Image (cartoon, rainbow, N blue to C red; front, side, top):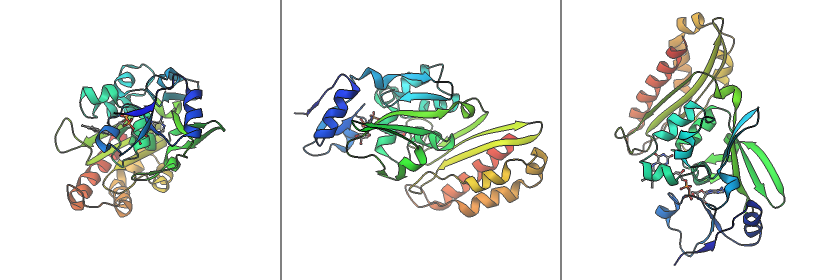
Length: 272
Ligand SMILES: Cc1cc2nc3c(=O)[nH]c(=O)nc-3n(C[C@H](O)[C@H](O)[C@H](O)COP(=O)(O)OP(=O)(O)OC[C@H]3O[C@@H](n4cnc5c(N)ncnc54)[C@H](O)[C@@H]3O)c2cc1C
C-alpha cells in the first residue's frame, strides 16, 4: 500500500511540503528502485505548472516535471541537452524520468545534470516562503548530497540562452552502447569569433563524487586564438590532466583517466 498526497497545483504541494515529512515523487524511476521504508510520498505528476518548457528571452526554463521524452520532442530544449537525455536508459524510463528527479536524486552519473554544469545552468527552488534561484553547481554538493531544504521543491532548471545556441561537444561512454549508466561522459560548449575563443566551458562525469569543471583553465583559454590553442594543445590537455580526479568504480581509475584525457583532447581539437 503506497501512502501519499497527489496535489493538482504547486501551491497545494508546497503547503503539504511545509507541514508534513513527505518525499517528493516525480517519475519514480529512482524511488521505485530505492523503495524507502514507510515513505509518505508527495506525488508531483498531476501538477501541470511543473511540466512546462519556456523561453523567457534570457533562459530556456525546463519544468522539474518535464520528462526526457518531452524534452527530446521540444523545439526549445538545446541540442546538447537533447543528445544527453536521449542516451538515458530505454524509452520506458525516458517517458517517466524527469529533470527534477535527475537533479533531486543527486547522482554523480546524472546525465542531464552534467549538461547543466557545462552550461552554467541554474535551478529555481520554491517553498511557501518564496523562491531562490541558484547555480546548479551550488545546489549539487556531491553524490547524494544537495542543497534542497525540507520545505522546498525543485520548480525549474534554467539554461542560459547564450550557451544554448553555441556549438557543442558531447560523448557518453558506458559499458555498452545503449541502456548504460555513464562511466565517463563529457559535455562542452564553445564560441569562436574571428579565430578567437570567446567562450568555452566543459564538464565531466568521471567517477569523482562531483561533476568536474575547471573554470580557471577555461579563463586561460578565453581570448586565445585557435592557432595558439593548436600550437599548445598538449599543454592544455596536461593542465586538465593534473586537475581531474578519478576513483575506482566498476572500472579502474586508470581506464577513466585514459578515456577522459582522450575526450578532452578531442573536444579541444573540435574547436580548432
Ligand atoms: C533502469 C534505469 C536506468 C537508468 N539510466 C539512467 C541513465 O542512463 N542516466 C541517468 O542520468 N539516470 C538514469 N537512471 C536514473 C533515473 O531514471 C533518473 O535519475 C531520473 O531522472 C529520475 O527522475 P524521476 O522523475 O523518475 O525521479 P524520482 O524517482 O521520482 O525522484 C528522484 C529523487 O528526486 C527527488 N525529486 C523528484 N522531483 C523533485 C522535485 N520537483 N523537487 C524536489 N525533489 C524532487 C525525489 O524526492 C527523489 O529523491 C536510470 C534509472 C533506471 C531505473
